[in-house]
Image (cartoon, rainbow, N blue to C red; front, side):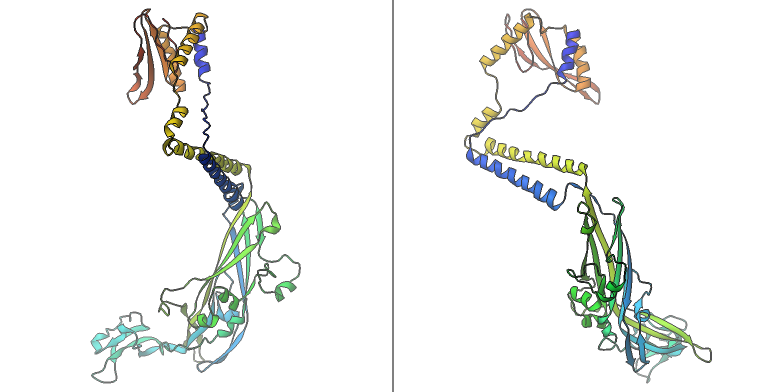
Length: 471
């Protein structure tokens, strides 16, 4: 019993290796090496060189953007006369955020006050033929005020507009043909960006680290000469996006400024640089679409000498700048290196698998190769195994146990090792070999005991792949 337990325990630690057959086929050999070289190039070139598979990465970038626009200009319109525009007038909002709007054109309606006037004929809900079309107290849809109940028209047969109570006179509808603030193209925008990668405790900004401000007062951004000068001309930004500033300034638009930080921290602090990309975001598939451009309205309120409230309504067109920040940092770490290296070595086995398929199923001599690869014991080898096992049994190296003991021992082995076991039942005249397979199903353990071989009376029949049998 002690020897049986020892044999069962040691068999759990047996190791089986594959059998290799050398095929003297130059075509398959060349194919195998080409596949290996291709996979090796993929692992080294793409995984480790291009994608830096040996690094741990951090894409959760933390960012702060501060903007400042500089430049002044003078306009002189018939409605308001000469007017000086500074950043506090044409930049919205003024506090310098990651999204800002710069006015390039405007339509002004000065000196409005609350009162009664005719609705615009362009407003469909404001048109009328009689007073009944203008119910009192009803707001004009997409209009400028509330209906008073009167229909104002030139004659009895014409179509007029409803009288409204609102800010009068109503907004002017004539838009200038040229951008009134077109000279803003010479203005500059200062974009200061601070970033941090929390996993690596790494921080940096896109501003040159200098103790004096002389550099920032004289520089303009250039990819080669001044990569750490975050001051951009508005004309250059629109040009880098592929458009003309004056064409865009007439109706407005939206420009995206993308700041990308791709930092290889293995190379050091000085090798982490910002990269800028400029693109127009409000592009339409149809040229001159009614949805093109960017505009909105706002008003400035004041009181006259009599204490009456007035306002100046401004419909402004301009360019909206959206500053986006993306980034990724990487640093060497042994764990991703081992994972990617192990995955690459496992992938190298695909060459052997593919060449095996070629030899087994696509070559003229595939039958011969299958016979060599999946070899079976012949009669001579079989008898040799029988003699060896019988000699081992006579010398006491191998022993037999009653079937009941075998069942108990092998059930324990199946439970802890999940392998199939082989029982030998002998009766002095006949030799029967049975393979007992134990599996656990939903109804409990199940045994499968097909008879593998049963020799004639007085002879031993044996399968060396299973075990031995004594006469």
